[in-house]
Length: 111
Image (cartoon, rainbow, N blue to C red; front, side):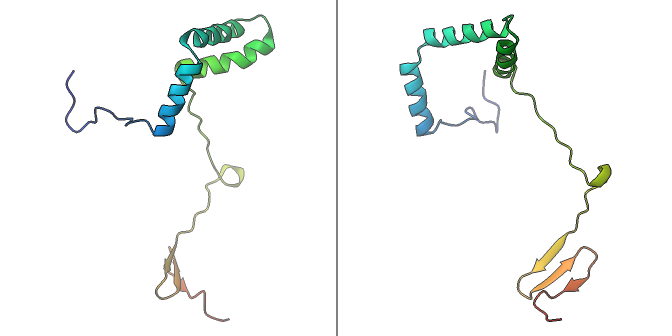
């Protein structure tokens, strides 16, 4: 399959040196046979009659199989109202602060 114009053939880029070293260490110390055994145990736990084992294993197995679901959080003000927002522009050269309504104040002015 040819590369598409303007699209990288290696979007993830080359792994960092640390990532390469970690992968080499895992390949050396955690063989494919051991990895299969761990996955088999995780599947066994997820299918267990023991509720505690299932409760811990199933979310982990699903997260690695299908990806962790996206979490959405809605932020709101008191009683679900909009969050008040004030835009402040600061002119550092003149020391003036201006709000969105156009009023200006001098934070260094006395009084």
